[in-house]
Length: 115
Image 1 (cartoon, rainbow, N blue to C red):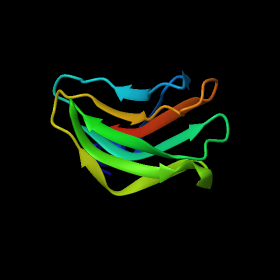
Image 2 (cartoon, rainbow, N blue to C red):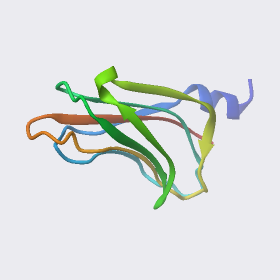
Image 3 (spheres, rainbow, N blue to C red):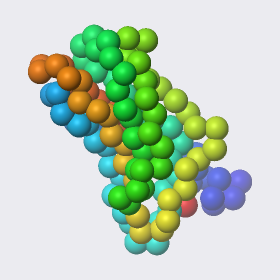
C-alpha cells in the first residue's frame, strides 16, 4: 500500500456545533502544503424541518457545490462519486442553511482526507 493510499484510509470527519436558526459551518483549516479531499457531507436538524435548505461545499472563499435538499425527507447524507480536491494551503468547509425556526438547531459534517 502506498503512503497516499494509507492517508486516504485515515480520513477525518469535522462536525459543526449546534446552530440555533443560524448557519451551521464545519471547517477543515488550511495547512501549509496540504491538499484536502472532500469525500462527503451529512446535514440534519434536531427538530422536524419541512423545508428545502441549502448545503454548500466551499474551498477557500469559493463555493464548489450548492445542494438543495428537502428536509421533509429527513437528514441529508451523500458520498461524492469523486473527491473534491482543493488547492494546497486552502481551507475547506460545509455549511447548512438556518432552519428558519428559532430553537431548531442545524448540524453539518464534512468528510475529508488529505494528501
